[in-house]
Length: 319
Image (cartoon, rainbow, N blue to C red; front, side, top):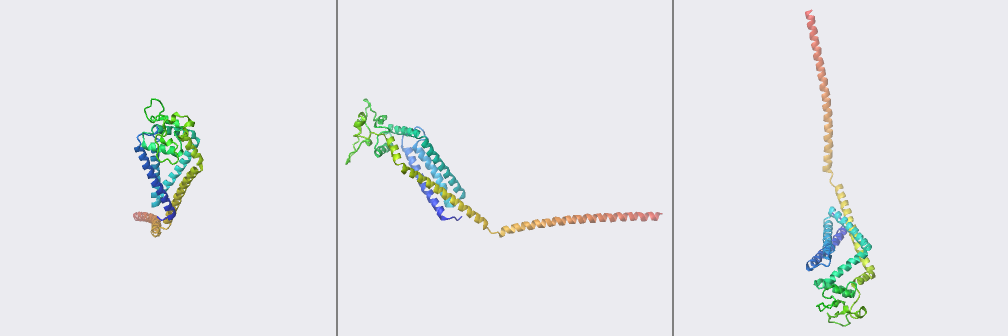
């Protein structure tokens, strides 16, 4: 089935890119799930690795259908692909609206997840590196303040804590001096015992949650542009899918209209001739029946007249 190559291959390339990206998402999610000993969330549904795997599998299935439909010009697969994308787009709008309406609940859940991540800081090396990266990137410490590190058993600030890191914070909370090449991992030693105005000379005292929210507000246009670009890309892919479906419908109609009519016409003409012959035979049969009935009536009448004449002749002879 021949269609225009522009819509076909643009749709195929777009689906293929998302298909590869979904495969990477599944691989990263599986690695995160299998490598971590404990999860920082209580619910199985809100586990980031599970969400990443689920979204990756959904994207993989949808984009695979799109790739096969575009490459093979399969009308049914393209329809399934287009309608599934429309449903995903609607769900994205619903999720955005719900997130905006329940922003307070989202922040509470984020704070709970970050607190659990702090309590398991030493239990998972990948989680530890991730927290250190966040604290260095946003120049923050803890969830709401640097004292949140008392939630961790190693940094718990009590006198009878045998840990060498008690009442301290990780090195990623420390303010590094210019030209410092060697990282001092004990730079946060005993900083939780200090007052805020004394500690802010050595470490970052603001929490990471407020810093991340502030970064989101400052870069709202950038994040909105990314979201808008993603939505425009999805709409473009949906448009390409419907264009290809429209072209396939046109090709199918042309094929039906250009089918050689000789054989079909012969069948139609033969059927009409057969019906006409049957009508003629029925009429001839009815005429023959009428003629036979007339002949039978005439023969019966002649026989009756002959019989009556014979009886009259015999009567005259006897008289």
